[in-house]
Structure formats: structure tokens, C-alpha cells
Amino acid sequence: MATPIWAPGVNGPDQPNTARVRDYWLGGTHNTEADQQQAAHFVSASPHLPYLVRTHRAFLRRMVRKLAHLGVHQFLDLGSGLPTAGNVHLAAPDAEVVYTDIDSSVAAMSRDIIAGVDGVAYLCADFCEPAKVLESAEVRETLDLTLPVAVLVVDVLHFVSDEKEPHKVLRTYMDALAPGSYLGLSHTFRDPLQSAVGLFSSMYTDPVPQFAYRDRDQIVSFFDGLEVLGSGVVPLPLWELGEDEQDLNPEHFPGLGGLGRKR
Image (cartoon, rainbow, N blue to C red; front, side):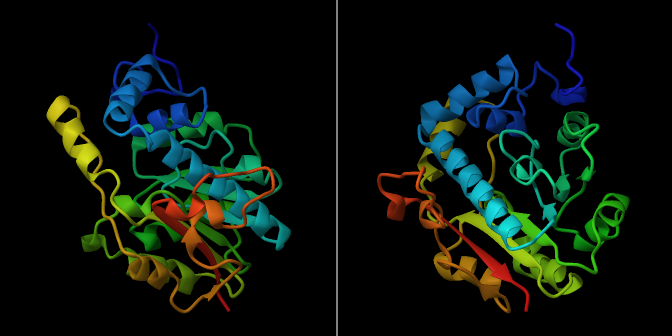
């Protein structure tokens, strides 16, 4: 089997990749048989994982549409994974977007996916190093930091340990941006996966993600100094829910999200 150009290097089609597993759960096409097998392994231990991933992505789309309605045309999507399956530039086709991911193979794959799309760039970087991100050529050449920018951190903060000081990281981004900029984020706040991750670890030799679950107060504090909009920091299915979207028990969703504006 030849290596597709969207699956380069050591994380090619024979080795599963977390970003491609998520793409598979989101109904995307940038995944391989190895990714699908890994997805099945995860689901065998935690059947609701695809639902969690899809709910975070639906939240992202609603947030991007709201921001576009508010007149925002610039987005910095931190830890975005693959830019497929309804990601930012697809939800807001006229916007300028910079995606980031720390995985070089994901970044290479993503650059191929967005090749030829005007106003969209992909940066390989650790978003916990905001100075490097903000000073990068991708950001400087795509976004005008003198105008409002929406920083999006969706379905990724629960992978960032306290040692990396995520609250300080996000404050650094917002301090560097123009008034009228926004911070949109989601975060899993209960631990529905702990037993499943333990079960997976005992069943398989593949590495599993490390999670940093935070309580509601810790998540709300990410918005300190910002004006929280709309319905506040709430379970994702309750945030600006569209008439065409339904969740049987939205209040039980184990993740919170919200949108804040820099005054």
C-alpha cells in the first residue's frame, strides 16, 4: 500500500494517529484502516467517545457561526488536529484562519488538506508557547493582530497538564490581542474515561492519551478578565443550541464550554 500524501512519515497508514481517529469519528475521510482499528479499540473500552468528540465539534461549529455573525473574521485555532469535518474554515469560508498542532505529521497532512485555500494556514507548534505561535510567519502573514481575533481551544485543554500552566498561557494570548478579541473553549470536566482508559491500558499495548480533568470553577476561571457571553459556561449541548440539534440529556454532558470577549 502506497503512503498517501496526507499520512506522511512514521505516522503513516500502518500506524494509528489520534488526529485521524478523531477524523474517523467525525465522519471524515482522512483516516486509514489502522486508525479505524484503533478507534474500535477505544470504543470497546469507552463506547461514548465518538459522541463526546462529535459534540465538541458541533459546539465548535456553532461558536464559529456566532462569531462570524458578531463580525469576527480572524480565527486562531489552537491544538486543532486535522482541518476536516466541519472545522473552522469550513464553518466560516470567508474567514482568515491559522490552525496549530504540536504533531509534525498532523501538520504536514493538514497543509496538504488546505493547500490552495486562501487565507488559511497551518502551524506546527506547541500552543503552550504563545510567543512562538504569535510571532510565527503563519500567524503574522495570515492574521492582523491589530484587529480582533477569536482564539479557539476546543476539545484540547483536558490534554494539557497543570505543569504547563494553561490559565497563564491563555491569558498571554488574550493580553497580546486587540480589544474585542474572543476566547472560545471547551473542556471535559468530569472523568467519564478514567475506568475506560485503565481498561484500555490493560487490554492493549498502544499508548493512551493523558487527561487533566478540571472542575467547573477551574474551567470558568479560564475566562477571568473577559466578558462571558450568551448562556455562560455550560454543558456543550446547552450552548446556543440550534433548533436542528437535540441531545436527550444535555445537562449530563461531561464537558463545559463558553465564549468570552476582551473588553
